[in-house]
Length: 630
View: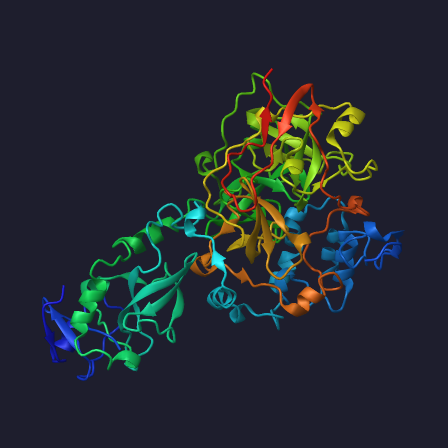
């Protein structure tokens, strides 16, 4: 690779510029060593029990049944309402401070009993976007993933865990010790020059790099996004006519840079030559602005509405409901989200649909091709299948930290089911929600007990601790057959403690710094750093709402940093602005301790419950239940 060593000459300036150069390369000082190769020039470097009174509504009740650790409010709703009316409150969750209070309209919407927390932020987002951003408790510029990872010795989930993210399926063998060519920042030259660096540590898309020649000296180590435009495979400078210049700090260290680099790079790995092309291709998204889709109605989960794709960022869609004239009534989700469908989907399966007042498709709007949407697994409904009234356990879409006792309310076509949360349903069924039969968010009766997960019993149910056998007998119900549930567990690669960037599904525009805190087969418990555990979310390992560290930087999406100490201290008081509020019907809802269920007779069939995978065993065999053969 290197066949000649010389001092800097006239060739230096002429050969270090090419048609592919982005800027003119100034002549290099003659004091720098260079290596000539095939006419090109390369330069190398230098609570207590009792009664309590709600501070918001004045309701008196048992302290233990009140919300949060402080027991100041009877429900999440009152906590949020109090926060909304507090002068100290910030109106943007995750520290998006605007300096102005919510509008009256926003406050009214917050109190509506059936407002879906899945998109609560969207009810006043337009107001927030129109307000000028002022001081923030923690500015985004003050947060650095690199410093956060280094100072706490955190480990980030690898890019290969996120198949829907850029490079998720073609990350290859990028790992520690891979060499790349990067800009040399330890240089006083008037033009951009490069040098070779090795990956010391990987954190998602981000890599901690160390310039070649620094050995164990970490003084100039730096973090960068490996998919960035300034990161290249070794040999890129040769092909582009770019100079390689040693960092000043170590320029005196070697007299024969050619021999040093030949020794260091022999047998070393680098990025694939088409890496940047793959990055670019993986960031091309088929969804385009002006496309029409059917999406869940955020105010009535039981139905869908037509919405228009307003913008696409990193595969995430900002959808504006078709009837929103000022484009303020919107909803955020990923293009692979199970909440969006092609036009006509609702009619085809028998799902409720809100017809638009707009009788004619607006100019420029067009229906999204059906093949662009995420495919669901085909199921056979001709044999034993789900029936209305069957009981199961399900993640509550209005409170994603809870897995609740639930009931199948309606069986739709193509394997879709309408689910209701026992004890908390609206009389008109407007808060039923649609899950596919293969959804990883619904579970057989007893799932929580055998996996030591807290099960939320029906609101108002007094026979505690809750026992499924007794409840089924009392309600005259049967459990949905275990064999109908999805028990596939992919080799996802997540481990407890891994860091990532995750969508706050209670405010789906926000992508936040998060941690995996529990793993049950394919189910992940996601904790938002700096916030209380009550804001955690249960999410599937293949959810399109999870992203590698550095995804926001790569795509240009705004990352919400961890809450600072001052905000953490006031979370249970006036500054709780995270829209986690359930409807008023959840007032006084008390969380239960884990069930003490033992082997019971369910639906006339006997099962032996096996202990689920531990938090450290992320890729279990999915043996939720083993049926006893006769």
